[in-house]
Image (tube, rainbow, N blue to C red):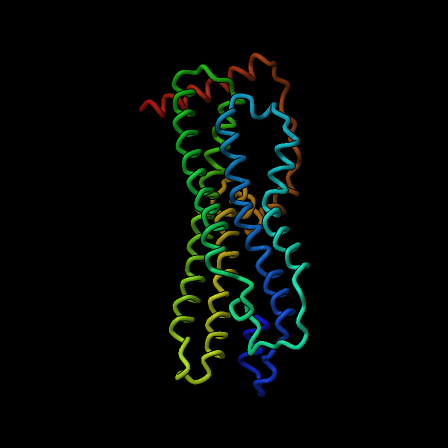
Length: 279
């Protein structure tokens, strides 16, 4: 937004010039969160796949090494790029007409197509596969009644979590492809010496295309708020000020219940769901 404001309010063309090395560093730092977001989808997809494969004992599993690996995976590739950035030679006397990821060549379209974008697509496909497998296994376990309650709970959790993850992955893919397509088409179209102020127009198009990322961030938040039942109910309660009503109510203590009665109630709930699925 700051670059876009400079384009609109500048009075002298020299105000848009920037040092090449500074512009390169700024572009690499700005794109690091986007690349980390792409690999976050991959890490979450792998975690959901593991939860689907070992759903019967997933809650009892303790794999700290796997958790550390998934937590560090999104930042591995951006960290390598940042280390390479420190080893680049600096040229203090080279200036660019405008500072952007295109003019500094910090962001190359093939690098986005070959590495981050396939990870997002792979995550979306993984979430769809996990959603289908979990739903099918849940149907089989409810009708047969063989699996434990913890296994059924894990399968339900996979279904509830994979739906918004798949939608968010596709939303990220659509916004990224839209951004890259606009930049590529307009760069080829404006790469003509006969067009007046071609560099300026490229800068304007680049900044407007980058606004697709803030749009995605709002869509991303909406998907997880309204796509998951827990966050949806909490948000509705917050917006409707029900939390103040809850605070006025006196707490109620549930009557004592034996283990047998508790299991009998849970069995009736699952029997009802099994009858609904069979119908």
